[in-house]
Amino acid sequence: MKEPLHAETDRPEDQPDRTKIIIIDDEQGIRFSLRGILEDEGHEIFEAASAEEGLELIETENPDMVFLDIWLPGMDGLEALELLRSTEKDLPVIMISGHGNIETAVTAIKKGAFDFIEKPLSLEKVIICTNKALELARLRQENLLLRSSVPAVRQLSALSGSSPTIATLNNLLAQVAPTDTWVLITGENGTGKEILARALHQLSQRHDKPLVALNCAAIPEELIESELFGHEKGSFTGADSTKIGKFEMAHAGTLFLDEIADMSLKTQAKILRILQEHCFERVGGRRTIRVNVRVIAATNKDLALAIKDGSFRADLYYRLRVFPLHVPPLRERIEDMPDLMKEFLNEFSLEHAMKPFDLTEEALDMLKAYNWPGNVRELKNFIERMMILYAGKTVGKEQLPPEFICPYPNKDTAFSTRQATMPDLLRTSDFKTAKGDFEAIFLAEKLKECSGNISLLAETVGLERSYLYRKLKSYGIEN
Image (tube, rainbow, N blue to C red; front, side):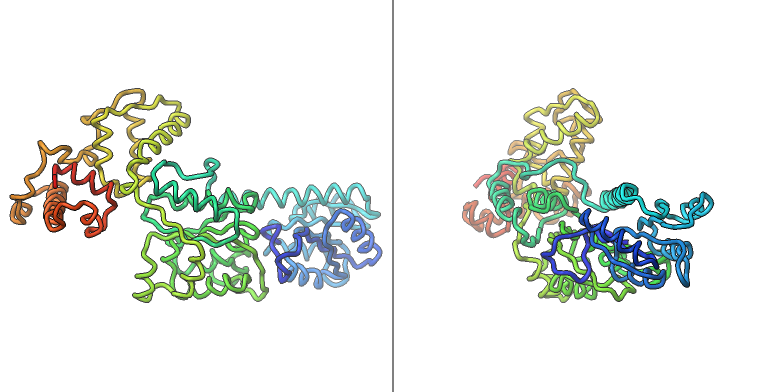
């Protein structure tokens, strides 16, 4: 079956997609009549005079539906239908016969036919049956895509936040989204790379086509080729039927390859060939399938380092990195946190019919001083957790979970960094306290080395300046 309905096989990319229908009948007059009816409806028609010829044509042309005569020389239509159903479970087949009876029609439906029509053919019935069959195929395809696509929770035109870094990122998003340019998104886990990919698709010219996602890190190495390219029935143990892959499903739309750095070098080589040639074969197949997809890739790893250590191909990196976008961690845009919190509070309030909670100024300051290692995803989980516990209430410092309470919120309780030593740290049994003590010692000493210059310190230790200011303030470190 032609899945997706718009996929092409060895045809130029700029040729308009047309619904492909195969007519299998040994009577030339029937084929001629059906061709005339269906071509007038805008379909692309292929003909076969025998079941054997028709099955071969189905394999090479990958049609949207089939008209199949029951009485044929050699293999009859019911035998052909059984063979077809063993490999193409969802391909709509309309049986036609000049010797029809109720028993034959029932047999055909039981064997998997979509419908049964008698000769002489009725123009009206042919058109109605064809439209119903194609609509069923379309609904099945949409269902398949819904199960495999990135969930479109809400329409996105920009990423939430008003910080300068997010403003710059949103400006780049608006510029690149309407193009077909491939994008490489980098950023830590939980920063919102998938959200950015969804926004790129929704703002593109392909927004009404599929957005298909594949998490490269979640698929076992031995199955990732099948997931990407699909497979033919019997191509390996457990391949009981033909399956289309993500590339084929994303035809005319967008393919989102998440955690691209987790693919093996062997799979990377095959991906590179497809990206260059826009065509591939299913696993175990010999037929070339041509696709037109926009690729958005994402990773939380440093691909430059991966290239150096030999785990990622440099040619694939430069093929994907046409337009790079970096999503900053939450700790480097903490001024966006109130906007994000408000958005999540509204979302959970509507979803669970709960009143949002309020935060005291002290609790909010403490959350701003927190490092947020899980980034925006951790913030969203925190909001959901607090909504369950304190919906409609005011949350103060005392109600915050222990992991969010900074041990040194102000200089009165700050650790005495200038007198602390490593032996002092080793006598501390609590890891979180020891970690905070070390950060305070480290920053205090580095600040002295930089002669109190905060900008130089930020550059030296590799931290964003506004985030560094908050850290120094939380530890009570003054220059």
